[in-house]
Amino acid sequence: MKILNYLFIYLLMVVITASCNKGLDPITPISPKADEDVPEIVIEFPTEGKVIRSTEEIGTAIFELVASDDIELKSVIVQLDGTEIGNYSSFKDYRKAAINLEYNNLLDGTHTLTATVTDLTGKSAAATVNFKKITAPVYVPLDGEILYLPFEEEFLEVISGEVITPVGEPGFAEGKVGSAFAGATDAYLSFPTTEMIKTSNVSAAFWMKINTTPDRAGILTVSREDLANAGYPAIQNNRTSGFRFFREGSATSQQFKVNVGLGGTNESWNDGGSIDPSTGEWVHLAFTISDTASTIYINGEVARVAAMLNPIDWTGCDQISIMTGVPRFTEWNHFSDLSLLDELHIFNRVITAAEVQSLYTVE
Image (cartoon, rainbow, N blue to C red; front, top):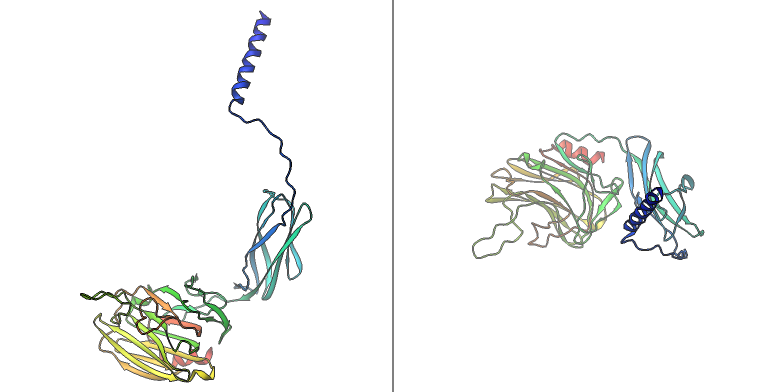
């Protein structure tokens, strides 16, 4: 009887084993691949030329790197200004490693970050980026200030903390204060007008170094979509709402103007004043729009005042375009401005002549 029991148990185990293996491919030995490829290392943060801001002189940064190899990683070494700050030799995924290195002793100044990756056969590769760290105290907006763009190597709107994604490929250049927005063909910034349109008053102040090619361009544009008239297609040049600050002229004379839309049915023109851009000098520009007038300032002084019959109308004005007339003020070729723009302040109130003079002299 015991023999029959043992035989039954044996046969049962054979059946179970066969069932478990059903449908499985047999294991086939594969010869290991030769390690022929050079490993790769990418520094994802900071990017080349990045400005890292901190409210403290000694700041913290998290450096982000990705290393990879076709067979197996051996090590990743990270250096800051030639000094080793990280060394990795153990990886969860032996072919790819995402590394976040927190560094707590970052001083103000220009720095060089270098990362070197090595595979098991000794092949290595390196990546390098240069960046800057600055101490930037918390910015306290001026009375009624709703937008401030200093253009310090990034399109950071300081008050909201939002980094604006540019349209096209504008760049940066030496500015009036630090670095400046450098215009490019078909390039501009766009920002919602949510805070701007809460009142019927608005002001702006900024520095520009004019590039007279093209000889006309939009600078700050807030317009609504056009409504098609019977039998005529809509064009992006509705001037009965919002405002348009722009320039026109020649290589030796550029005139700054502002057009204001009134009540959705009318408009006001202020032909401002002119400068000679051939000097290559920076010019400080400002304008204010009250319920009854618009005023343009050049280098802290009043250039022209234009009376308005009605307050500005904001109907359909949902965005401001910076350094272009696109998309809603293009009929007279007020496209992208290739000039330099710096220290842009926008207010939802009328700033005084003394405040304009202060912005001009302080900055």
